[in-house]
Amino acid sequence: MAMSAWEKSLYQLIRRTSADLPEDVARALQGAVARETPGSNAATAIQMMIDNAELARQQCGPICQDTGTVLFWVQAPASLITQSEFRTEAEAAVVRATADGILRQNCVDSLTGKNTGNNLGEGSPVIHWEETDCETVRVSLILKGGGCENVGAQYALPQTSLGASRDLEGVRRCLLHAVNAAQGKGCAPGILGVCIGGDRATGFDESKHQLLREIGTRSLVPELAELEQRVLSEANQLGIGPMGFGGKTTLLDVFVGTRSRLPASYFVSVSYMCWAYRRRRVTLGSAGHTAMGL
Image (cartoon, one colour):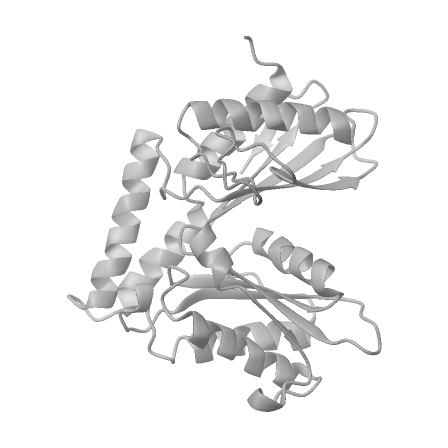
């Protein structure tokens, strides 16, 4: 069956996200391997990541065997496409990408344990929708693997065991605790997406949304920018290193955002992303054709 322009554009977005590591991530890995001791386990591990990413790009194959949860963020005017119409096109693109081996069969019914075989199911793929007044549709995609998802964390402050009060110092303690607890299990070097505030659900939503930022960018809020830089520096002094082998590179970056909270609640939500930081976006025109990709 012929693909519509919408389905084709979304299919190509999925294909590139799965197989082609973004330039900012590739640069960060190159910088990391240069900082490690030549011939060390850390340097060898990062170089293998770089080589793996290049091979995936050349062969248009998945960077990692776990192609992860399919997470879309969409900004669209209702005049171009409705949320229902977009879901139909996105689901068709996901099914085709799964059949072509671009996505692994990753969707399992939580009650029966049966794999749906096409990555469609209750809540899959995940689509975050924002209606805008723009004249184009902007679609961002993250493929987030299970290993890094498993080491995400959420804290309700105060946490007396960590000496963490309801302030940015308490947040810092939580973030370093999350990194130390993850060790190499999240496929370090990782990237932290963090939300201070919100409720339990919206906190995790915002922490994942933070992962759409490019490596090296800092929050526009000075206090948060300082926190990001400090946690990045201190985490890289923990000695965990790539895949837990030791070394100087445990994190590639830290992104912190906020949501308003109830007086009774102070959540710190942490989404951990692995080194295979599969993140892309595309801008689509009125007929679904690609206007600009990243």
